[in-house]
Every structure is written in C-alpha cells, then in structure tokens.
Figure 1: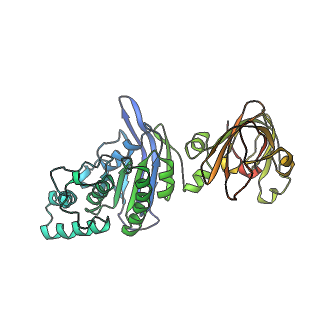
Figure 2 (figure 1 turned 135 degrees about the vertical axis):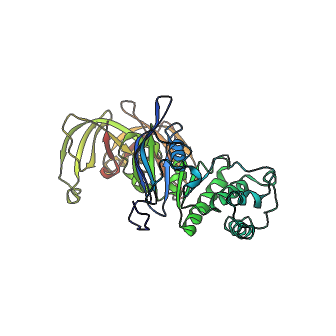
Figure 3 (figure 1 turned 180 degrees about the horizontal axis):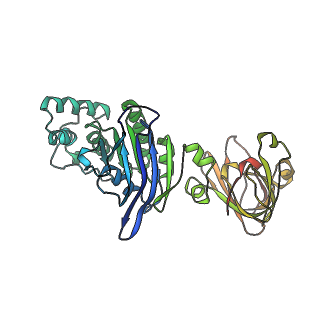
Length: 376
C-alpha cells in the first residue's frame, strides 16, 4: 500500500485484530477505519478492550491475529518508536526531577534533535497549550490541569500523525474537564492531526469526537456521529450506554403504512405493552407476535395532567413516584400500570410552568417518531 495523502483513503485501518490475555480475547476480531484528521472516540465500560486496542495501535502490544495499517503502511510488527504515533497516558508520567520545558523536550533529546530546534519546538508547544512562562517550573508546582497540558505538549512536540489519548481527562475535576474538552477540540483542529481518545465518559465522547465507536467485550457495537449514536442506537446496549433511556418491552400487534408518517416510508408499528397499546414509527417489517423493545429518551416524554391526556399520542397514565428539580429541568419517575417506571425530563422553560409532586396522577406520552424499535 502506498502512503499517499488521499483524504478518501483510510488513515488508520485495523483488519480482524485479535489480542488475547490468558485465553480471553481483550480485542476480538476487530476491524476499524479512521479518517485522516478526525477526532475519534472509543467509548465503553471498564474491561471492554479500549486500552488494549490503543496499545495495539501504539505498538506496545502485538496482535495475535490481524493487521494494523497507519497512513498506508503495515505497522503490525513495527516497534513503537518507529510508528508515526504518540500516546498520552492517563497518569501523565511526568519526570518529577525535570522542569516543564525538559519534560516536553525529552523525546526530542532522545532522538538527537539539535538543541536550538528543541528549544524552538518546546517554546511553540508552551504557547500552543497556554503554558507560556511556566517552562522552569517542576511538575509538583503545577495544578492538575497544567500537568495535563504538559503531558499533551510532550505527546505533540514530536509531531505525530496520530495521537492516542487514554482517559486524558480522568484526573481533572468536573469543571476543568469540561473546559479542557473544548481546548482539546480546538487544538486538534489547529494541528490537523488525527486524535483517537479512549474514555468511559459518554458526555466527554459526545462533546469532543466527530465519530464515536461504542465497544463491548472486545468488539465495536456501533460507529457513528454523536447524534447518530444518540438518536439511532442499533441495540439496547448502545441505547443504555449513551445517555439516559427508557426501554419498554412489548409484543408487536400489527404494522401499517397509514397515517402522517407514510410519506416518509415509515409505517406505524402497534406494540402491546404492560401499560397499554402504543404506536411507534418503524420502517422495518416486524411479524405480529414478535417481541421488541421500544427505546425512548426521557426528554421525549411529556408529562401532563390527566385532563389533558387526549391531546397527545401514546398516552400512558400513571403516578409520579419521584421528582428532582435541577434548575434547567425537572426529572420525573412515573410509575405506570403493570409496574413499568418511565423517566421523563421536563424543561423548566417558563416561570410558573406546571410541576408535579409525588403521588400526582399524570399522563405520560410521546410521539410515534420518538420511539426507537430494537430487538428485545
């Protein structure tokens, strides 16, 4: 394969990569393609194989099966120092006896780069990560956020084509994490490098990444843009892992292309659930009697007084079990007939808007196109 810079060609390509630890596949026949210059996030719970996959790409581990290509070259057996890759570790691993400038330039010294060039690149990195004037400080004189920036500068100073970030914001407090997410996005855009970040924080992945791969047991369950993963999950696993979700199990009663959704070539699927009968937009055929799960996001569920129940589709009556006021929104848990509990998120957009208390009888409803039909 030639190492051209065709933007349409895969920049990173994994073909059937498997890595076993003690007979257990940490990465299981996984194939993945990254585009040049994109910010890609691997998202999944602890133990799903995210970090193992990162280490395979970096060259710290060798796959038992499969091949890895970077920029058109097969690097499956290439040692880490000969790959156009650098990795930023969760622990930062800064040298305590070196000042910030020496920490950032350490890799360049190891490569035998001229002293003047090292000084120029280090100064450039200090400016890029907004640490100008702190080059003489030691790591123990820095805040958590500053240490994170030093580690990032050290990873970028060698100008890798691919930067791998393993839970890079895990050690920061919530406010600093949110600020740094946007800084990483802007930095990646300015450099034009390809970033691959591993995280278990779905919000973090959705903020930073142009595409997300959701991992499960060594494989990738779904890849897509954040909005696609959130709005159109392909499985109950993905639906539950990304954001809050209600999963309503039921039995298909019938399907029709009639109604206002027919023009979009999307029929209405009638589903019988414990609390009644609901209609859901669905373009895929389902046989009567088959079991399905309907996924509905809490913000798509409307809670209204019982006397307004007939104004909305898919009305399910129940009782407010709990509520939580969060300022911009109120979260409700509504217990329906049959014991099903729905979570609803009500935006507090207007002062004096209707609110409910525990024990209130209410109507919970959602539009047919708010439900996502998934395998039961």
